[in-house]
Amino acid sequence: MTSRKHKPLLEPGKLERAVLEHLWRAGEADVVETHRAVGARRGITINTVGSALERLHRKGLVTRWKISHEYRYQPTIDRESFVVRQMVDGAGECVSWRAGLCWPRFWIS
Image (cartoon, rainbow, N blue to C red):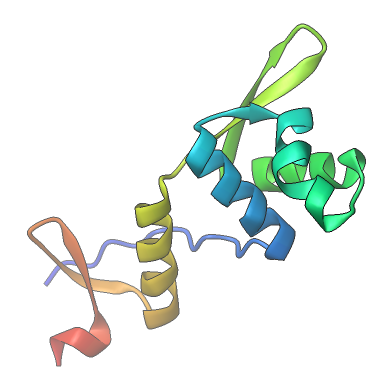
């Protein structure tokens, strides 16, 4: 059996998760667009949404590039892969890779 280690995902908070959900739907967005979609109905400021995007960038969950004076953000991982990584992180390391899939220790017994 081969073991392939990966760096566990840093768990996003509730606002960060909502921002990620928006980016998965939209594909890419700036802070203002994200605030309109996520922040306005929560009654939070645009700066709070910007801070959430910055944290997601530092965690490696979004990438960003500058256009004029603002950043545009895009997820670095699709929703399905994110969910799988969370399950694997919760289950422990992959002890076997079959058909390109991770098999956690508790599935191999």
